[in-house]
Length: 327
Length: 282
Image (tube, rainbow over all chains, first blue to last red; front, side, top):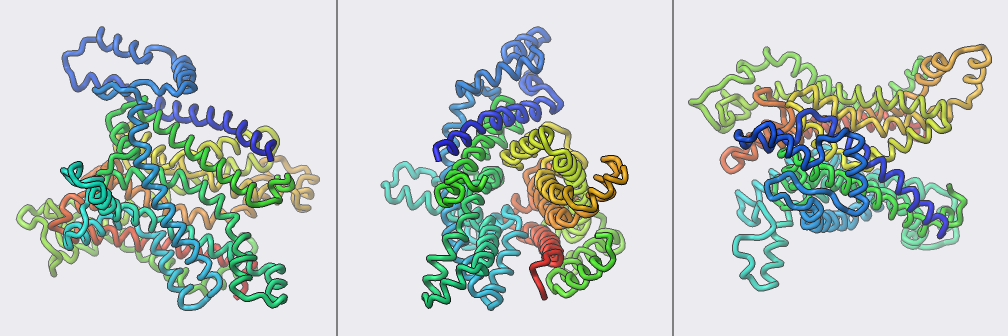
């Protein structure tokens, strides 16, 4: 087990290097120069000042030198300073946004798994019943409905027509003066639509997946054996089948990380939630290179860690892998 | 899928699937509508009518009008052109790249395979939407860039699929036989392995079209996709968000169009998957 863990962790290093290489290439291949953005806002900048600005950000050096300098700093978690007027370190900017995006994602993941697993299991057990068919339709809708459109519709319904829920931000104006309970309730109301839309979007895929792994497991011989022993159906499903059917789902948990982070751009823009997606969108629009590269690296790094944790979780859950027979 | 018996079986199974057939018919209908757009609607997609701004649906304007008095139904119909184009071109690019990489990786294995598959692993770590956004925002707005970028960020799944197929096909007797006859690598790969490795790609390509349409609409919605005044379902929704308090029709209809189109592709994709799956007997 320890050897397996070590191997997994060592594998992170070349992958992380690859991530930085792709990030750097993507951002630097794009046409246009980052300093142009700052200059265009101020027509009085002379050619000399422009060169000084380039030198200040190290943009006058050849690309491979820039890359080496950037990676060397990354190792120390130094992501450079933002090009934005406030000129703050990128890491600080990201650090204050990450908790919001991550906690939103964790909450919607919990809701998603809490609903999708039972739905998938029930649909598998009651295959071809009305419930299964109804769920299939629901699942296809979940795939097809663009989440940002669903968000708009719910905003219109609950925010505009019914006026039950606030439609943007995390807190109401003046919520600092509320008591702790009211403050929390206020935040819950703000998050209700974004979180349920996010959960609904991925609910479809997960419940479908759960259904198909459950169907695979139910067909196996040991389930027939368990039934033949005279165990109650409930025991057969929950004790024997479910355990094996859940294994592949662990991997899916890791794989769903990049989609969730990517989706945050749209949610946070629509609902004006000050998270990482909104920060990224703003950074991209303002050509804030250090910020864009920083978020790309951190986003991909989070996925990498998510995948690794999923693999380790899998190894814990499945003795075949733990004892080195699998791979 | 060159074997005519196999094709017959596939077609019979696909046809028996009512959902898949419904999806296929919908896609055909969409193509017809977007092709015949100028004959279907009396308005032009950019035709302004500032006396009839934000009009609710009526007999003259079935889906209402937008903030510049343009007919929403007309713009939704013309938007279908964009979506269908983006879907096909983007997926074409992704499938071409993925297939070549998968073939090379699976056939030659060894170091090359190792490197290519690590590249796939790394690319899969990036939140795709972030990657697309980072590149798109730095380029000038154009539908071609969008198709290319969506294609360039979507080939990894196809590469993995093709590689897995090639790994098993490579060891088959018939490939050995062709090799013994003196065929070169290129001939073996493209003539004898590729045609047999394509069926799983068909499923993922169909689902990929749906994904590309969703991505394009999200980009256009954020204002960095298809540049106005060209209508796309996503950029109609941008105006929809702006005027959501007064004009629900601006939001409802383009979104429905996206949903129906994506649904159609999913149904067809699932239908192909089931028809190809030997385990499912009907």
